[in-house]
Length: 402
Ligand SMILES: Cc1ncc(COP(=O)(O)O)c(C=O)c1O
Image (cartoon, rainbow, N blue to C red):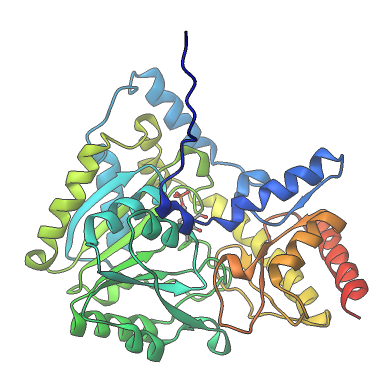
């Protein structure tokens, strides 16, 4: 007689704190789509959902790798031509003192491995607020409490240096920088990078700098790599193919470790232990790294042209719409407008999906200063779709709040 289990299988309690608002909202959107409505998706940062395509020569390289039988495991750090190309790219960005390079299944895995390899119970890591929610999700998974520092909206969303100074404790091990930033689209100034590096030196911190959008700078000001301004400081620079090279589904990311060898080497042994434990990153896709970084970069001209036009359209709408204000994004493809409304921004976005079928993400899903409300727009869709979405949001706000 088979015995049926009486007690439910509960998830681990630590998952209580794992939140990923961007995908969680998709459940509401799915419900609305099931009712037959066409959703205008301004919530997920996947260029391939819109009029962007992975460069053909990268696809060819992966296809060829598969044909050539590169379908087994690779070495845990990644294939040599990819590692060499990433080192070359780092050098072009002025990064010196490189101690290690490794390829992962997306920056998501780099983040998971780098944070897990660093933190002991009771330690803390400074993360930006607002932030890309992966960081808080990984910290929740490894049971590390949050220690967030604010980005300053009044200062174009630059990190709030005084807040960082206040939040450093004897157990602070490092600081995360997202530059260009998701969700604000801000880009750090060189002066800001130098000041953060100085704090890292003084407090013995490692810097994790997520530069996954570094080639998507919309205006002409060049992106400055954190590691380039602080060759002596332990820095892991995160990069990958998902955004700059329009291949998010391939799951290819990497880490570049730089700084004084004697300081960073023991930590890198821990990172490599975890890299070996998960075997390797996706193997054939690694063959696209060298052609991506060293081959034609023509796609970037077209991508940036589209992003500039869509950013400008977004800012025009923000400026013309009452109750909305926005710091102009300078990189990536996100805008983070502030909204002056009498209810929570989570209610705002849920009702917006239900009534107007437009999906954006609430500021409370990324974090924000108490008393402020925001929502994040992904301005990847074409101008026609964006215009329709902004007309719908405007109409929704007029009816609901005037
Ligand atoms: C700041 C930031 N880091 C990392 C990621 C994840 O990158 P990947 O696709 O390489 O895992 C994203 C994705 O949106 C992101 O915005």
